[in-house]
Length: 480
Image 1 (tube, rainbow, N blue to C red):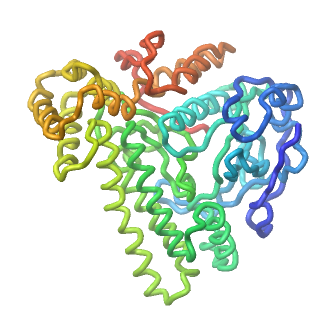
Image 2 (tube, rainbow, N blue to C red):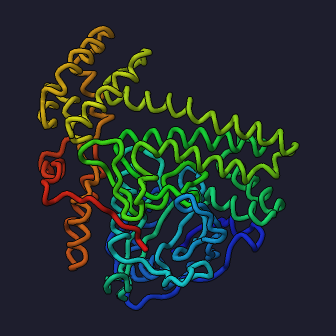
Image 3 (cartoon, rainbow, N blue to C red):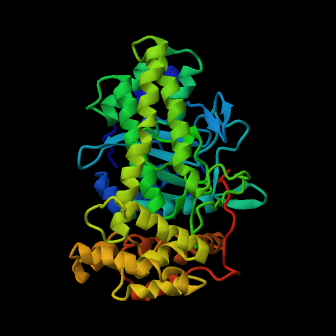
């Protein structure tokens, strides 16, 4: 199997990474291969399914042209500074240009210990691998920028967590794996030479329209504003928005204790380690600003101006997030409500609906999908007290009428903005539980349905249902 690697990150100074090969595993076996993604990358799916391909995806064989390495980075974790993190259980095989000419990283996650493992085993348990595969591919199907899953492979070896669990390796694809924490790593060491090299690399790779570090900051702020607005539109809660988990490419990265809301409430938290609600649903825009402020701080030494002036211009750039996010949020929710053009009070219309949904404990996804149907009043059934929605519906319908919205056009527009299917937490957990017994049918069914989340799929109607009280998942956990 030939892979045309072109490894630009490996050409950066040696202090950016630790070169090492993946640690081989005992008995690799394919769980899932994302054939459409493989083809988009210019890879042969059939070759990847053969023993040599599976060996590569498990880390047992390093393909020609790869320069395997673990990236160095630092970060703030729950607001606390950690000066060295890095890829503790992931190895970047290299970069390729896909069929559109876009540069993409190919990384093995769960591929063994690295110098950054911090006493960890460097391995991944099966459950987190299945979760990231399911959720990242669903995010892609929603049209939300994200890392993607190329393959999931069993290792044939157990990993020890609270108990022994099957081990697995995820092959992850990304525009890059460079994080806010990558810049922080060098800023904390006063390494301006490395900061300049990293900024130049990111500009050339992701933001060729940028000329300066300030331009880079402004561009990253804009991408993050759009990304977080898109998260909010599908009820997604990342769960661990540390600076080492924020991609400067503007992609969703690191699916640990992530989850999607069932019943809507802005203070919803799932992560077992987020005991103070730092990364609650409604706080995600605020935390994005906090993280971007850390990014701006890391860039200050290479702004090419006095510290005072650099602080002033960087502050203005970060403060620009609010308006950018507000505009993006209103556009996302206008589309969800079938509004083709925005009026001044449309944001208020959406906020009013969300307040009523929180009061009525309405299911986030099912409410918006019901509003997309031929009889929008069916959304009342999602509320504990259906009358909670009654005062809002006429206002929304009057807004549609005032704009002359054709009913069929409105339904089509809303159905394209409001998924019928999301990776509901209880369904993800069911797929994981079955996988731990060797039954991957629920996993494959879920990933197949979620590849077309906006389509009505009557045969999968059970996957649209909100959990019953005994099915509800209230906590999610980090993969480590």
